[in-house]
Every structure is written in C-alpha cells, then in structure tokens.
Image (cartoon, rainbow, N blue to C red; front, side, top):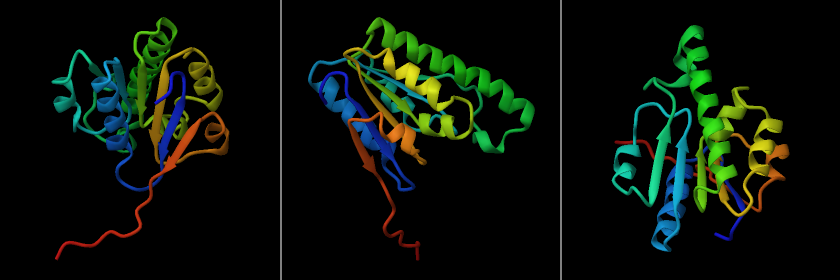
Length: 164
C-alpha cells in the first residue's frame, strides 16, 4: 500500500476485517508499523491473536462492553459513545504524530452510521494523516466517504450455504 493512501473495505459480506488484517500483516512483513483500532466489536475476537504480533502490529479497543453496541441499553450506549470517541481521538493522535505507517480503523463506518462520528469529523481525522496510510472498514459506505478513498473494495455475500 502506497504511503498516505486511504483504502476502504465495505459491504454486507464477511471478510472486511480479515482483508484489513491481511494488509496489516503484509505491512509488518515489509518492516512497517501498524496500529489497529477496533470499534463496535462484540467480544475480543481476533484481537487476542493479533496482540501476539506486537510490537509490529498494535491493537487497541476502547469499548468496555463485550456485547453488541445495538443491544446495549441507552445508558450503556452513552458510556460506550464516550469510549468510542476516546478511540477516535487516539486515532487522531496516531495520525498527527505519524506513530505508524498504517492505521486500520476497523468498523469505523459503523461508528459513522450510528451517528457517533460525523462524516465531517471523519474527514477532519483523515486530513491529519500526512504519509500514514489508512484502512477503513464497515458495512455501509456513503458516497461522501467513498470519494475520500484511493481504493474501495466492496465485499458482498454472493452465496451462503446453510449447514446440513
């Protein structure tokens, strides 16, 4: 991935986060540093495994709940919104200081969709990047965000065979 590029993996299919993680591993193999910030993930999932790849790949998750954001009570959602905003502020710090070569904002499109971060705030965040490449993932991709990217991959489920 070229320096300072923005890449998006979006769509309703499975594989957006694994595609971004694949790019992270590729960057680490090339001697680059990677920071992954996970948003709206229920449970820890793959982050335990990824933490073993430190210091080349650093993983951060600011939310405290292991439950799906949409299933939380309004009071708990508000607590998590504060945590998520802390995560986006950290992302801005990472970009401003040039702390890494690649920053992955996993499920940040969901943060925008849920109204936690506006499109304008995301644009402002991305303006801080200078030479840092950024990957955004999520399900819904608006035209406003799409135009910010140098590369967009739409991941869709074409067929899902039920278990027998």
